[in-house]
Amino acid sequence: MKNRFAALPFALMLSMAAPLTAQEAEKPADEGLTMGEEVKAPPQPYFREESGDWKLECLKTGTAVEPCQLFQEAYDAEGKPLANIRLFRLPDGAQAEAGAVIAVPLEVLLTAQMTISIDGAQARRYPYSVCDPLGCYARIGLTSDEIGELKRGAKAEIKVVPFVAPDKQMTVAISLKGFTAGYDKIQATQN
Image (cartoon, rainbow, N blue to C red; front, top):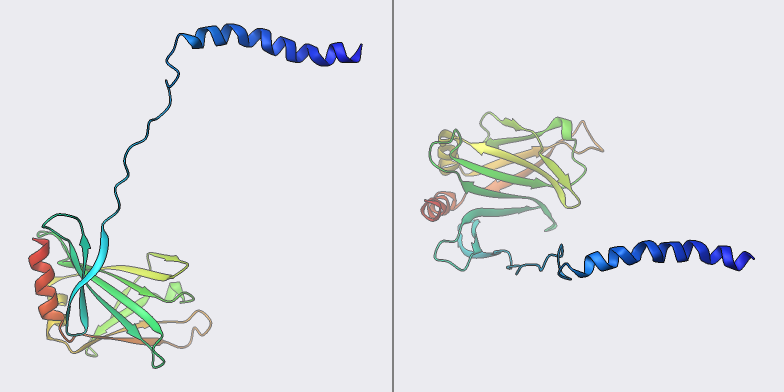
C-alpha cells in the first residue's frame, strides 16, 4: 500500500508534464538561450617611454590612437612602494585641466584625508574615494594653475595619517623632474 502512494506524486507530475512537453515541442529547442558573443581582450597598459622620473603609461588599443597618462611610483628608504600617481589630461572646457588617481597603502586614517603640497607651498586636502585590498585612492582634479605649479616645481609631497598613529603623518615625495615634458606628451596624445 505504501509503495502505491509513494509513486502517485511522481505519476501526477508526469501526467501534468506531458501536455507541456507537447507544447514545447512546437518551439525551437534553443529559444530563450543566448548564443553568446565574442569577448575582445581589454586594452593592455604598457610603458611607452620615460620623461625624467615619470613614465608615459599608454593603453594598446590596436589603433593609431593610444590613450596615455603619466605614472610615478614613490618608494621608502628600503625600496618598498609607498604610493603611486597616475595623471591624465581632461577634455578642454572642464573646470579641471587634468585629473589624477593617487594610491596610498591601506590603514590610512580616511577621515584625515590626503594633503598635497608643491615645494612646501600651501597644501590642499583631498578625500579618499575608495579602498580595495591593494590600497586607498584619492581621485583629484587639477586646475591650469596647479598644473603650472607642478611644471615649475621640484617635488610634490603627499601626506597621509596612519590609522594606527593618528598623531603622526607619513610623507611621500613625488619628483617633478621630467613632469613638463611628460605632461606635454599626454596633451598631444589626448587631443
